[in-house]
Image (cartoon, rainbow, N blue to C red; front, side, top):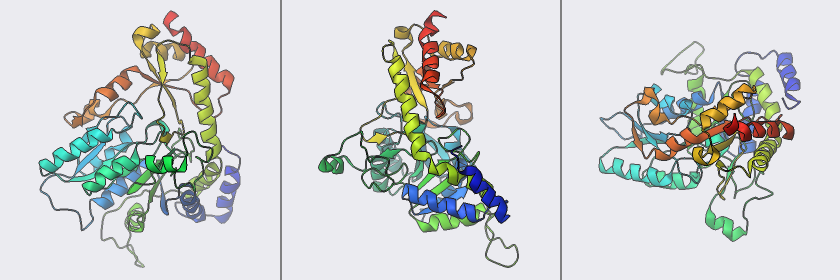
Length: 397
């Protein structure tokens, strides 16, 4: 906790607003909007709920083209399953897009190739859902530019990327004479370096217990389009119509955030910049302690992105390092240190067997060779050094 959460929670109790909705929810939405620069925000029970509401709204727009096919959604394959299950909830056909080595996020070149093939086949893509993996922004301007040509909305899964930023355009960066790392990169008012998810039709954030800031559970849906948030707000409270009795003209969901949870979120938001700075410090410390180890490399950071470094992720070249990823993870586990493999790509998941994938080899390689190291903001440099030493010794254990 950052320090002010308890004060906000006490205010929530004093106001007697405990159940979903209340002044803390309203304040959290406004403060979140001010931080990200995205004008319309909706606090929800999870990031998955936010994605579901955005897609549910999109698929029911009267302007959506009529088709005899199931709605088609293109999504990152290297991601957490909560990013894509809402497409299944809505009866969509999922197709997965591989990542690139530059950012580990959705490859815009592969996305464009898939969009072109869909157009040739007469298939309309309902939405594209890229993920900001491990706190690193996808190349959202390029992805949105491709999707704009095909009139396809982008729902950006920024669940892991609170506090992350990306460069608006290469041209504007060069014109301004600015290059990473930038001192003002954390500023929420920076037009050159907008917040993760800023350019998307809708963006999704998570406050799950393992995220860079947490409400213990919760999420946020944000959009520049007020109608998206207005409809999602109604859907999130069982789609109750404005009547003195319970009137329902459409099916809704129970997805709203509680006033107490929002109180925690307000306190967490106040320390987000400090959390980003510490996460990046943990990453830098790992780099320092493992820089001379053959066969170990780190998740890169393109010059157009500033990751929040939610997790420090390494790749292990089994031959050069002397042992494989699983052996390293087990060596850490014997020392009561938790580490996890990189997300298993969605196209390899049994539940998505048969789904089409464009590419796939890069994400499969990262899954096979990648390991997420302990990255909590409470870690000291001594903690990082202890983990690094276990990693170094793994080939000999």
